[in-house]
Image (cartoon, rainbow, N blue to C red; front, side, top):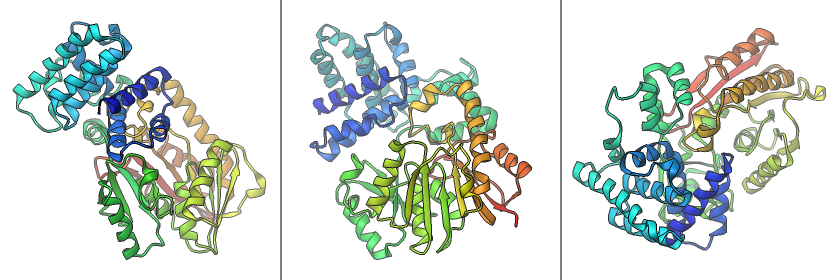
Length: 443
């Protein structure tokens, strides 16, 4: 187990030095150590994601309990302590074992002389937890500031490990509801597995049972029965049924959006910003062999991911193209029954999964995103046949990227909304924050 913690520490150190953009890092680490037991890989993933997810909270607690503040600590010691506090407060790992292995880890990294410091800080936190009597995943709350000690925004930032500017976005958009949304987004969540829609109930049940036998916990979605939340997965590619293409990783919020588009057998579909391909694959299944899907993204690196997924899932009616969605292609005008426009966005609905977003988003990047979204809209809305369907979607919660962009479409083009725009939020169900709107091009 000590080696497992060492691997997690290496990954966290690499992420800290990457200044964001480390979304694939843990996948690469798990691939490197593919020979490890599934439970060990799941623990590495938990430590990596949890320590990064809760970094602001962990540093606040460490700064309260340590004589040396986190910015002054040696990077290795800082991250060993972060990992240790995370395990004590957010996992079921025995506290005494966490302290012992953290001290050992410091020694193995050449800091044996700081073992006493690591021991003292973690034992002090462990004593406070034991004295509190709190045993569930709310243990961290005993270290939070008292109400009124900080501004509401600062308090929420500490509690949910968010920079102040990002807290302000949520409170500005959702007022008092913001805390419920942040609470639902925080912490480690399950991975959403969508089983192939062509499977019979018996085939899906057999696939689910095979995965459960490996120790993975699966929870069926109450609204979309072919979707399951998976916990303690480790490397998803090693799960039974992955190589056979029985399931794909796709959040249920994204699935709801594609289903709302009403894709029918025989439809011709264009997915404009398609990587990694979840919407393309579901659209392919809905359009069936008599229909087709053209799946596009801006680079070969992204389209290679799409190709890998469609080959694994056996989607024979998909054509993949490298295409910049912000550039208009007149040859595609009025060529599609359904156009899926899942535009690049701030990703505020998925910060529980893409942990680098919360530490790197700026006002400048937000402003540039809304401009890019407009350019993509301008380029792509002509591709829908008259009477056809446009699905506009994002994985964010900002009105500037969502409702206001829909209004831009209806104000400037011959489109009307079909029903009301839908903002899915994680405090409503076990799903990402996700927005979609179905629009019809007027005949």
